Length: 636
Ligand code: COA
Ligand code: HC5
Image (tube, rainbow, N blue to C red; front, top):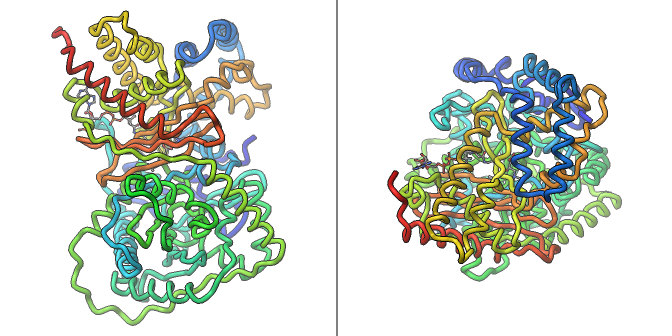
């Protein structure tokens, strides 16, 4: 199942020029990035392997609100068998504990492989999130280029902190977090393979890249962003360079090769080999992969009603709107793509394998803050920079067919996705805090209530929890549907229940959610442990244990609600697609006095409707506040 199993830290980040990796790189801190970063990372705890009995017991509790009673009793038998003394569970647990002793993180490589590189659906919508910035105040090409120049300068300013290891360490609940992901987001790219993908990172190669890729009019350009003396180009110089690119790309119509990156990964993997069999194409693709990041300068937007501007902006960031929109003005394999539209719509799309949202958002917060600073008086630039290089592609009839196929698939995906962005303006974190409740738990319970009101049942729900308290930690799952949440949502609209009882049930549900969160961020949740046990069985060539072929396990992993809180300093909205055909993707950014959220769903599913769920969430938040306001809690 696993394509590679080395324990090297940055194994997910493979050195290579093109195609499959040849050898694994050394851990980040064993190479050029040393010093402060190294000592910080060494001081972090390792991800624990939770006790087997604890996970089994918590797994049973998690199933309760989402499976039928007869399924639960079958699963109870299987779990008992799995964990009995001398059974396969104990053997796998010992294997995992052994793995943990010999690795910097027993999970992270497996996770990147299973969750991303072996996942074959298109990265577009199915994996890569979008991020919408507040609309900028320009409305024309000149303003677009001026803003884009400052944005590039802002990213380079952040890159200096990465290069010099002066990034401030982040904390969660007073504990320092792993900073590794910051070293993975620039100068890296996903590479399609036939059965599994890989990620390359050129940041620490002997010749680190000094250029970015600019996409305009579906054409790609290599833009050097450092002068010959190693200093970053000034925004004024960058403006001139971007003008040249826009001029050059206006002249010619090009084959939209970027659309290939929107394909199913197996299909793209094959087309990729055809594409790079030509030397010119190979060189162009390498330039994109090596670049520090991609800047997509989008042309004129297709008009959207003002109140839906944020929703259409979310679509532009998530997939670009289809082949006649901006979907081909992207290279979706690139880890970080900034998108700047002519009408002031700005944001980003990122390929998820190397990093989670928070480091990307921290970078973007920095860039936005940088672009708002008063422009510095320009210094005297050292010489005039070279003309940006057009990245040429020779398109054979076979590749033209690949492009045509990709257009058809992308357009049907674009047709299928509905995204609704809402700015909930009635309150933010302030109200739950005033009621002494965790704002995140409060919002999650509103989601549970909204879903229950719509479908009259609870569903398996995923919320991302950060594991960055641990070295090389990524995420675990907070299962928001609990017995406590089920009791709360079932009682809420029940006229036979007293308000005081509803308040108690709400408190209980919020408390249970916060307790699950604490458990997850401290490495004691169940989902990654269960995945690890399953992977360990494959590692030891054992048959898949029956607990993992049990329908209840499949149900538990069928997340009709896939959710994530991603906070930011900038007032932005993040979004991602549903993870199952009949599910919703819900990303929210709780600010102090309002909450930005985006809901996505597939049009092909008759049951789901993003706008309806978004409305139901707003209603649930308001109803929950009303209940609390009208029924002050009894003082203990
Ligand atoms: N009474 C009053 N205030 C409370 C409270 C209570 N009972 N419980 C929490 N608060 C406060 C907190 O102190 C915090 O204050 P701040 O706004 O000053 O920071 C605030 O409310 C938010 O806390 P809470 O809503 O409980 O959530 P959190 O910030 O702890 O976040 C997670 C919870 C799960 C989102 C977080 O732990 C996490 O893992 N984040 C990363 C998720 C991630 O990686 N997402 C992207 C994946 S790509
Ligand atoms: C711009 C931030 C987007 C957040 C992306 C996110 O939350 O990704 C989750 C990662 C994880 O491991 O939990 C996956 N999810 C989108 C399916 C929730």
